[in-house]
Length: 371
Image (cartoon, rainbow, N blue to C red; front, side):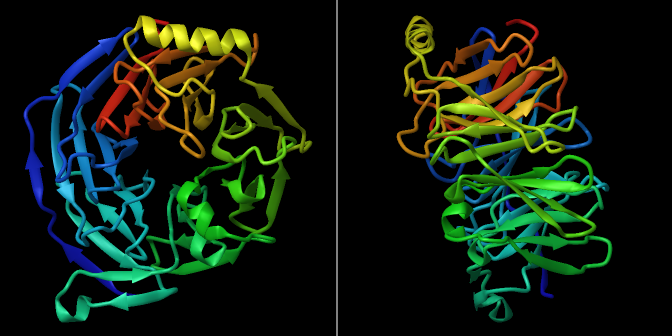
């Protein structure tokens, strides 16, 4: 296993300018080496700082919510395309480098980065020559800390799920039964902690959601009732249910892992669509009004929040939505920036939902106590 330690290049920016359309506040733009850095996933570290993935500029920024200060760090490999993030028990931030065929560990105390090359499908490597280029077809896109304290990640290029144990350095991979066109899944593949001793992930090209038991390595797959719904968001709620964003189906769904029952909640309707359009216009923000649900999560108020619209087909939406699982009511808020594409959401901070905004290169915060 090749392990490469590289000092990151840092850029400290002035405090971010905040723009608000109650109850959403935007911060940024996030400093980037290119005009649109590709802000997507955001993740809090154990000290309360928010880390921001920029997959187009291959950078990771640290944001201090208290001061509005950004500090940017470039990945060791140019054009590495950093993917989804999660923390290990020691507080290190981990993410795949999609084109770099590796995992990247970030020391959240100083932004120092260490690369761990995947042991599979390494197609090109000039690191022995002192050139920081390495590629492969593993196409790891997202990562999650499992209940076994190992890191589990998608391997779309190998139609598999991978595992790395930071304590032992051991690697494993598990072929997903029936998986095809995993390369497509690599573009939208999401993996998160699942119910019980599992991880949960989407298979959008197969119209399925699946879990993998981290002990027995048994897969369980759930086929979405709506044909070609393109599930691209998955997250486990406190009661063990799995919530799914069905982008092309314009629905969200709840999976009961015990019974296998799937309940879908349609989002498209005249009232919802008109309310969406008018709400954006009144706030001075426009975007694709179709309710194409993307990443989804339960927040501290017990409601389900998700991004709208996810650009699986048309994209460039500008809303964050709330679903009340008791009343079945849906409410949407427009971001101050038009066609912002809320790319991912984070509900770890009580009273708030944080998210990345791809096109304006900003981050947003929805105050869920104000709505």
